[in-house]
Length: 199
Image 1 (spheres, one colour):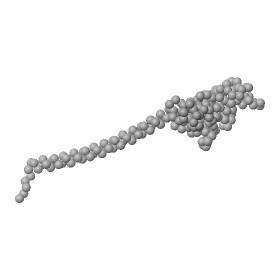
Image 2 (spheres, helix red, strand yellow; image 1 turned 90 degrees about the vertical axis):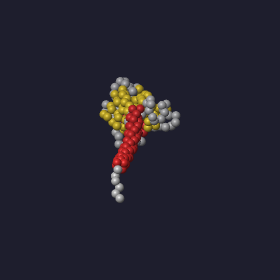
Image 3 (cartoon, one colour; image 1 turned 135 degrees about the vertical axis):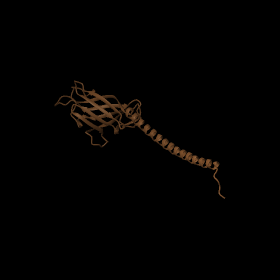
Image 4 (cartoon, helix red, strand yellow; image 1 turned 180 degrees about the horizontal axis):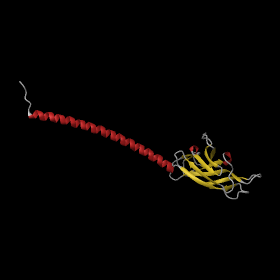
């Protein structure tokens, strides 16, 4: 006996086809949503890292407190400054700053020189040392407290000629995170008979 197809059977087949298409659309939407969520999470993480790095470049730097120059009163030549001592602290809003990983660009009458910490061991033009001025927890050469004061000691004769009266020097201090501080030093016009001067 042959079964006749009725209108009800046709509607059932159409309903099953629609259900399959609907399930396929739901699966595609779920996969797309998962991809979008993963992408959004990755972008958020990347943006956060970029923001933190940018913030460090702006805030994680040092600030000059005072700078003095040691005067060389040689009997055979005019008095000159042969060493510079710059006392620094962390800038407001900065995290801790490790002076061991800091670089210095020295631009003066003798040229431009790249200096690093004496223990950094890189092939720089010269080096600087760090001494403690005020450091309650003994963290030197790391500035980890707004009250810390460390002194950057530069032997000018180690990489350039001494600074004569009236000389001007520009020093750029760059921390490991990229925070930069520029300081301009001016040697007084008269050095004769002095052991040290404020720059």
